[in-house]
Amino acid sequence: MTTTRTEDLGAFVAGLDLATVPDDVVETTRLAVAHNLAVAAAGGRLAAVALRWSESRWGGHGARTFLTGAELAPPDAAFVNACLVHARAQDDTYFPGFTHVGAATIPAVLALAEATDRSLRDVLTAVVAGYEVAAAVGRVAALRTTAHGFRGSGIYGVFGAAAGAARLLGLDAEQCAHALGIAASMAAGTNQTWVDGSSEWQLQLGAASRSGLEAARLAACGATGSAAALEGDSGFFAAFVRDLAPADGVGRELGTVWATREVTFKAHPVCAILQEPVTAAASLVRTARTARAPFAGATLTLSPAEAHYPGTDGMPVFEDAGAALMSARYCLATALTRGSVTVDDLFASGEPERVAGAQRVEVVADPRLGPREFVLEVTWTDGRTDRATGAGVLRAWARPDLEANLHRLQGEVPEGIDLAVLAGRALGGLDLPAAELVDAVVAH
Image 1 (tube, one colour):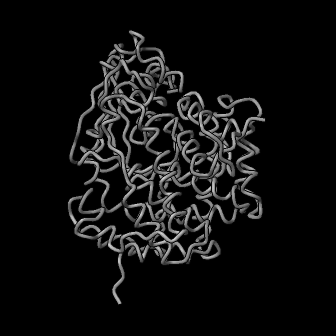
Image 2 (image 1 turned 135 degrees about the vertical axis):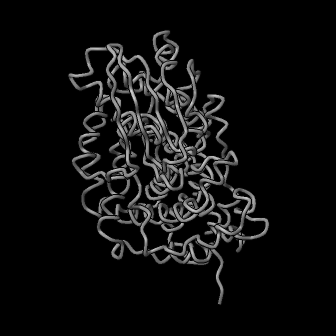
Image 3 (image 1 turned 180 degrees about the vertical axis):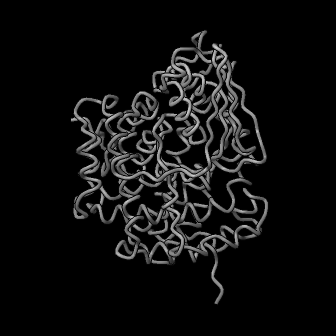
């Protein structure tokens, strides 16, 4: 009997057992939970709107917001917490799908897990389900949908949140398929936010997390989703990709090829495309050979998809910090001048010397380069030049990498939050109550 794409995805979600997930996939998921919660703890300055919104809600209980511990209904908590995770743009990234899967999935799963008194084991199982499903949809379509103006995190993140929430709720295969079908109708978000420098880039992740959670809850209450929600003539691929052919590949490798292994983490509060170029620029500045002279000019060469990604070529002054963290010109000029990019830098784009620095950086597209490959060429005022390249392969983080990043972030989180405690809980025993994970990112 032929099954639909959502039915195959639903069967995978309902049948997922953490005991059958490869150890390295479980480890990456643990690191992802710790990393994403840590950047949420350090994200309050950039998520002021979401935190103010949480204070204006009229009641609700069952789950808490990070930082403040305000009690809200799980969908509202998922919305606020997803905004916090994404606030620094330092949350994890699934590059093949241009999607911040963790920012949509983890808040939805944790909100439900706290409300239903579940364990870390349940959280990890649900998060793996979310990562794998979002990746299954996004990796075959993201290049096409981005070209049409849609933002991957908005239109694919909702599938991760729905799959994670459905698994956490223990829905059967049919209900999980319905949840994903409903989620397909809730997918939303464009990249115009990066062009105009507006703030909905952050809210898109909150909406994806909330919508995915609600899709699963509605399915649990008997709502049905289109059986051919993905591959139908008027379904997701027809609307967003404008081509049905790629839909045939969705979910074919689930449980065999683990996309969670390709989830990468960020050391800097800049967009995923710029992580390695910024690291390379900062490294050049830190060397004794180059530190004595300012940079005179720089050229960053990227693949066409990344060079032309909305916001990459942005020029200050920026009204929103999101536009600053997307701008290759601004972030590279900052790294080449100051040796790093911090959250404070994202709010300083109007300073004349920063504008002048960004004007000395050029972004070039080269079709010979693939995803995540780059060439950075820098000329210094004393006439010397440097060149750095990236091969397109991002090294997976291990526990020492996570610990080093948490150490860097600790000074940016509110008093009363200890990121070492957070890491110990996320990397510890599987019977830990999910509520204790939330406790670790609430300022006491």
